[in-house]
Image (tube, rainbow over all chains, first blue to last red; front, side, top):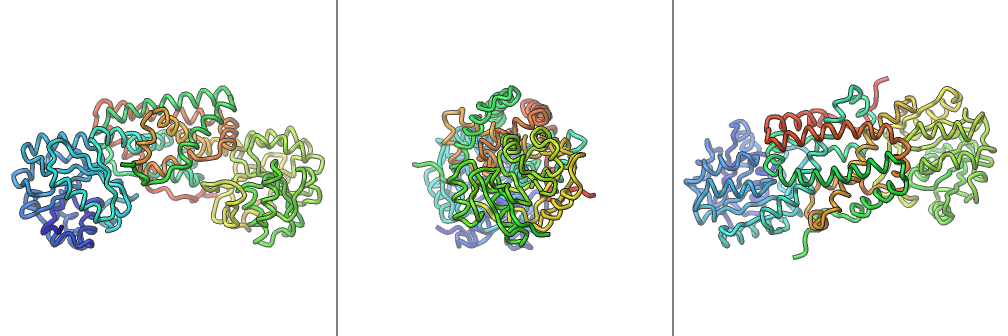
Length: 292
Length: 292
């Protein structure tokens, strides 16, 4: 398996890392890139992440046999529309969006009969700092990639997508877009919303800066994801809002129970609640994945 | 400054690390240890953290010129009572508890006229795994130590305590027990309660194990503190419950605002809320401390 030309639409951390990894693995000859901001595309070329700058998403796709969409999820449908006239049944089209139901719906609407070429993907990878400057050929190595095919996905493309990610060192997990969105509402989107709300609750207080100056490693790790990209997370939280709000209800019930035990000074109940949380979290290791 | 004998009461991560650091810095000749569990004390001796096992807290203090209490905060008062007959005005007595108002109150009640020797301390340091096996001479190096003297603290002991921590490489910050507890309710105790409640809300769902198997680095960092020690955190959350519940109210208001914006699909409002959280968190660096 070797591709002639990768069209990279969205030259950020995720897209740039994919291009670097594909190139290093010898899976692609030429990378043509497009970003909404011309200065980003230029920077990607200067950094050697892409070979050629395209003036539009459509022109990036021209001549490509593999296309990666790496744009904020809310920009998926307009991007599909922009490229659909050049999407062919023998092309591999993938995305890296953190939500999948909305991406699949956008694909159905915008790609219509060409949707078979599209394999929805979500690599479970990222970095504290986004942007093409942080693109890294190792970003996907050892990470899980969730693929959420639909009934109209072509088996050839699905097999190709699996092979591509495996050659980049990722482990592939397949599930429905619905199962994906429920899962990540629970283990990613809710934690982000809680971390954002936690920081905002802190900033509502006059002493916030003084408090933060004295914070330690618990604060550091718990709040790390509150520094995530606003445009990216606006889209994710809204795209998956039903599942997110359902998860938040579970959380609020658990928090209310905790607060009642604390307020009542019920040492036995508080210890039991901490013990339950610890028993669930302590043995967890990242990337254990699902047994097939 | 060199001490003859350190009495270590509580041979866990915090206490053991202090003993190792004191010894390495050449600040103490001999370490006598006591833990509630004799097997822990024995293990501390086998590991070379302490020189001698004492059969009681009182006997550990016998002959000591420096005493460190490193027990769960709720055990502070009973420990003070156990040792008070050997607490002298020329001895340095410190603790490492994560709450300070309750510790100071316990000191007033149990130590009475001997309270001048007691300097309440809270080193902002820890590790994912507790226990004497993880004791580490470097635990306090480069970390902040909050000292919360009261009006009855003797200036000689206060100066000694500051010097000890500085020689272990820590940076000392002084504030009142009240200011301390408000600060750590905001940046430590609330994040712990939220992480515990988050894990419990997850475990309330039948698919929890499946969800967690697919979780990535956001989950890893956000939930890390949910694996903390139940007995330790039971005591901290209860000891500081008023400040903790006040912080939780700030959080719940911020969360409710977030949920309303998500539910309404208000992209501008959601982006603004994320942007505010990011602006507060992104520039933060651990241990910047307070300007004097």
